[in-house]
Length: 401
Image (cartoon, rainbow, N blue to C red):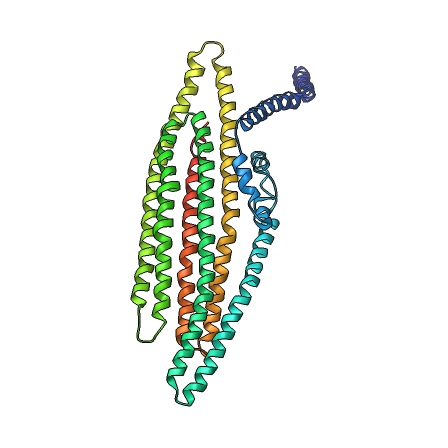
């Protein structure tokens, strides 16, 4: 009896072993891989169809206007190629090119401003020596005339450079507005195709406000505030008897309050409304999928899977277009930001060098001009950040599949 039980156990073990070996030779992996390949191929086909229906010609025109360093930051490729690269998930390359381009812009801007600032230092030191000689012989009026002449030359040189930077800032703002006018219609169209009608109804006025009203505020109010602050800084340091520092402080405070108010109101509206709309649209999409699967006989499951495939392709394209647009925006604003930042640093350096050896009014003006120039960088960065947040919220909407 005991031998019979042992034989039975041995037979069971042998059967289990044979079944295990047989199952190991069944090509499960091939079956799964074939199904995955088919799904991946269908997804790629949907992406290709949808990409062919979109027009990126305006983006390509913007890319053609970039210089070599800015184009290197974007990735040395076309906009459509960048979108396809992001869809494929390849985001690892290009960082070395970005950093090398930024360093190239930084050092080229230093070299471009060196002659101007060296001229200012030479004129200021020469005028300081002449004024010191005249003061020693008791002719103070001649020393004042020398100061006014020197100060006038410095003003002309600095103001000409500042006006160039104002033009650079204006061009950067206009470029961002153009990018908004191109990117958001494409993104909102894709969102409409995804069924995010509520989100589109929220983002449309927000986009119009950003590309219209807010850009107008920065161009018509913020930039003139910077110009007024610069003019009052010039007048304040013209003579020791005229002090307008309080006016300069007033314009600086007005700039901060206006930028802070615009940023806070816009972001609060966009964030609250966008989150609410995204929740509503997510429920609507799930409801549509459930209705297809439950109430369409026989073919409901297949239609629901096809619906998921179309949604997946649209979501990938929407997010890839958004990321590519942000990369283009970064490539556009890097040069103006670096240019202004370099000029600010060099003005402060020259002001520090001239303070112990030249008239304090000149060094004070240079320092004040550098401080006022930070308004231009804040303007560019503020608009770019609002654009960035808006695109990110649009990308995060309708991602529920």
